[in-house]
Every structure is written in C-alpha cells, then in structure tokens.
Length: 111
Length: 111
DNA sequence: TTGTTAAATCGTATATTTACGATATACAAT
DNA sequence: ATTGTATATCGTAAATATACGATTTAACAA
Image (cartoon, rainbow over all chains, first blue to last red):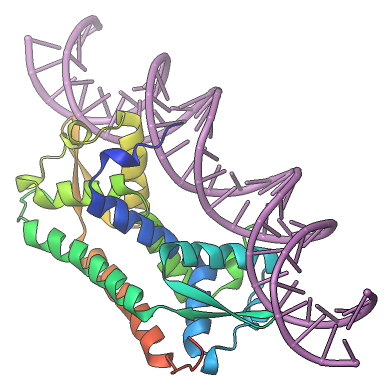
C-alpha cells in the first residue's frame, strides 16, 4: 500500500500532519499537563497518564517530531516544554483552513 | 493491543476524534472541494483526487461519521455537502483546547 | 425488463499506530 | 566504581488506517 500524500498540496499535507499530532487523547493530555506544570518539572508525565513509560515516550516523540514540544536535558531528567511559538503557528494554520473553506463557501440549493 | 482512549477525558477524546478526521490530506482536499462546489454537484469528487473511487468513498465515510459532511440521495448520485454548523462547533472545540492550554500556561524558567 | 451510472461495500494486502516489557543510556549520588 | 533514577530505544504483538479491484446496491433511463 503506497501513500498518496505526495499528490496533495503542501498546505493539505502540513495540516494533516498537524492534525495527526493531536489525533490521540494521550497527546492532548500531555500538552495540558506540560502547560500546567510550574518550572517545567517534567518527570511526572508518566504518573499522570494511564500508560506505560515507553508508550508515553513514544507519544512525546511524536509531539517533538512535529515541533510542538521541546526537550532539554536537565541532569538525569529531560525537561519537556511546549513551544508556544510553534503552537501559535499551528493554530494559525488550522484557522487558515477553516477560513479558506468559509471563503470559497457557496450557497447550495440541495442540502 | 488494547486502546486506552477510554481513560481520558471526554474533551480529550472528542478533540482527538476531530483531529483524526482532518489527519489525512485527502480529507482536507475533499472539504475544500465540497465548499467550492456550486449547487452541491457532488459526483465529481473522485475526478478531482488521485485516488480510486472506493478509497474516496472510505474517506467520505470518515467525514460523514464525525458529522462534518452529510450526503443526500439525489437520483443516482449522492449529494455531499459540508455541515457548517458542525464545522463551526469543531472549530470552537479546537479553539477551546488552545485557550485552555494558554489559560493554564505558567512561566517556566528552564526552557 | 434491461441497461447505465454513481456510490457503497467487500475482500484483501500492506503500512502505520498503539501499546507493552525489556534493555540501553545518561547522569547523580554514594 | 557502584547504585539508583529518568528517559529513550528495541523488539514485538495487535489494532487501525490506507488503498485498490471486484462486486453489490440503488436509482433512473431506454
């Protein structure tokens, strides 16, 4: 099975990738946890989720790959935090698609 | 492999499901095509995409399942259209999560 | 009735995602 | 040097997603 993603526009591919990063409740939960932590104490993420440590690490990697979070080494721990600049860009991209759809919206008689 | 989605909040599950619906470029392309069609002429979707008819039908089903589009029988064709009410709710849900994250955002010293 | 057309569904192959345990790695403290 | 702790990575199993061709269904037209 060959992915056909290449044949779509860059905007479509980019947005799909962003949406994919949010397409699991654990990753949304992780973002909320990271946002709420003071001083970026990041060793507690696993304790907050009903998932194994390795699974959480996998979800973190996906968020890191898309750029939504960054991890900095802090002794034996890794300090994760949200990249709010990337998050704002992401939201702007999402908004843009909804705007685009509204902009080309035409009244239709049939439904 | 058992999905752990049940153990997350309803908001997290709902947003993840919405994001999943957008997590493929073909489905974003479909939404744009539907928005731009006058009079909801819907038989042309397959022609616009580099995918087989059965694959497009599968993508349409995913958009339909989440409620983003509706299909009405119109003779031998099915007339698809965007449910703009649902789309607005979806955007509101997305915005809410970003707002939530901003609201609980704390300044952190380490990154 | 028969044929045409459009869309859905079925069957199937492959890719990707999700999840876990086990192991490896990196640093801190003793 | 050894031990402990936190995180990443590896290996693997199972679930889900993607894609296609073939078939079925539904509605209309001839």
